Amino acid sequence: MKTDQALLQAELDRTLAELAKLKENLPPAAEQKPAPAIDLSDKAGKVASFFKTLLATDTKLIKLLKQDKDIRLPKDTISKIEEILGGGDG
Image (cartoon, one colour):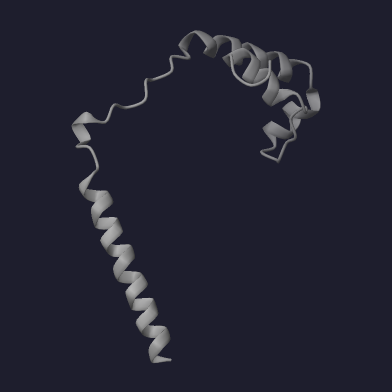
């Protein structure tokens, strides 16, 4: 039992020492560059139009939305949005 505790304590000490070394080698926050923002403003209208088209043709979907019930969108909804936004496989 004491041997297990000693082994665990030794492993903990090694891990803490390694963590301290890693922290020392971190670059200052000022040097870290944030990821560039993705401008999707030109895509918002296309996504809105897609949803308007989707809602205009599905009266059952509109009824469920008005009743605040769970809805199931068509299977290709996400892939169509990804296509509009320029991502995914589309």
